[in-house]
Amino acid sequence: MYRSVQRVRYPPFDHENSDPRGIPLVEVILESENPPPPAFKIGNDDSWVLEWREENQNDSSLPTITKEVTYTTLPFLMRTRNGWYIEPDRLHKIARKSIYPGVFTLVVALMLHALEPALINLKFIPEFIFTPISLGPLDYPLMLMIAFPVFIIPIFLRVFANIKDIRRQNEYIANPLSNPEIQIKEISTDSVEILNIIPPNGITAERVRVQVGAAIPEREVILSSSGRRESGQPPPGMSTELPDRRISTADEHGTGVGESLPMTVGRGRLLLLEPMRVQDYGPWEKIGQFPMRVSGPTNPWPGTIYSAMIAIHWEIVIEGIKSDGSRMKWVRPINVNFPETMTGFEILPVRSGRSES
Image 1: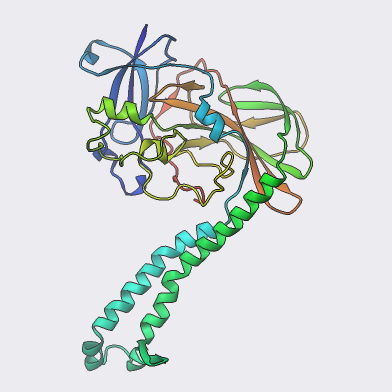
Image 2 (image 1 turned 135 degrees about the vertical axis):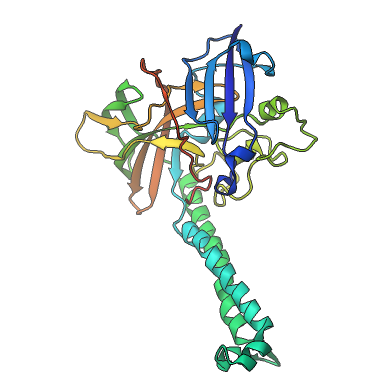
């Protein structure tokens, strides 16, 4: 058996409001039948970090896990990050940005209504603002009649966007696209050389890029390595168990405080691409003459490697537009060899867990 050390502090779903130093750093000794990859460290110990290194004499107190190490794309990633995906409606993003102004407007209106007598006596605010509006037999404060519609606008936008997304998903299920024909000559962490791309009928391929990310660690391993039980209190940054499936974002890890995806159709595979919270990518390249070389991320990432704690996943993404004007993405995992030079960098690239962001 091969032995190596993994050290992980993975960002939770709502990482924007989390202090990395408040999230435990999970350290384990990994036993595996296959050899570990060359050592690498992405991030730093004061923030989010992924590290895979050789075992040394100071690691004797770390818990030991026995898990598979493989270079073959894991089944859950093949299910959730492979094929055609629909772009979420832009109204989702507008709705989320409208939440804070709506809440602020309502809170201000309620405060002004509560302080109405004092403000009128002080003549601090014009009195007409507090003029009631009669609707039927009842009078309603003018400020609240203005603030409440602003407050509920994001809800209506979200519902309308979900209806549009569901309609587009049903249309795709009724008329699915076949996979594009793509010929790849050379793959490295620096770039991918593409000899040809032939999209299926009904869609025009516009641009392509290479991206890499780290999938969420397995929940069971995080709990056992932290000395926690499933029936007990989870460690900071994790919630109680959610549906039993490992996907590329919040559900498996139990950090799904929020909505990673808009409403999806409950049959077949997911047609909305879930974001990876740890992700980096190269620039979009316009599809034109072949052969073409697509640059990878500028950061020195390691190659493809999968385990229960650390899973470095590479993929190629083609963006296209259908004949009806809707935009779609085609995603295909790729296997990238480790570079001969050292890999790793100081700042782990963390993204939003919400697809509309």
